[in-house]
Image (cartoon, rainbow, N blue to C red):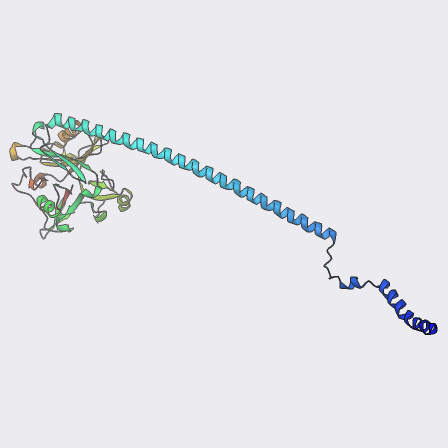
Length: 356
């Protein structure tokens, strides 16, 4: 029996011994571990350094952007403060200018009242203020208007029947046609063979040049887009646009320039006639004067030399002579106030009207 067990052990030993030898030579656990990506340590450190550099660069950009935004805010704040200071200064200047203009107007009104008495008519409109005086206190038969424009479009140059060549139109008809409260005759004209009339020199209506002549003897009388009286010699049409002229007509001569008397042409010197004059005071207000003559209403008219002295007495800075004689007409509130020397209104080529 014992011999059989020995025989059995002899057969079992070789497999057992072989299993243990194989087990210790190859660890089966090693073959079961998952495969990993092997990264060299140097490469890993390089990547970390690069990431850190990018982060530091981003921090720099953020810091730079923050500083830029800060500077922009500071500049905007300063600009706002400068803007507010400028507005305050402008407001002060405007207030001072308005006060100065009001004082100038008060002084001028006082001067005119002392010379002419109180106004015989006044109109206070949204576009213009008009004060009308009789010239009787100055020894003349005629009228003067002081006009302050708040809207330059309140004053218009009106061609007879809105045509360059026509049979003419009276001052009162033009005024009523344009719903104006004040009007005077304006530029000179020439008669045509067919009985029509055409303007002399340069005529501008609402910024459009209707006639243009470089007659050097004539003076241009116009109003710009600020409602200011401008005039003198115009040699090129470009000047009209450059000066911003909206309305204008021509006659002669220029009487005052910057408060100084201008030479009177020989043909006009020391001649006593009915006159239509226009100018502006030292404060910018417009002056309109019509004086009767030729025995009408007892008036013999006025010489241009006398007119220059009277205009300076009225504190006028620039002044021009418009068409006179039988053309002179002063319209206010629906009627002609002066006494035209022809015994009735003459049909003229252009009129200045004011619509307050």
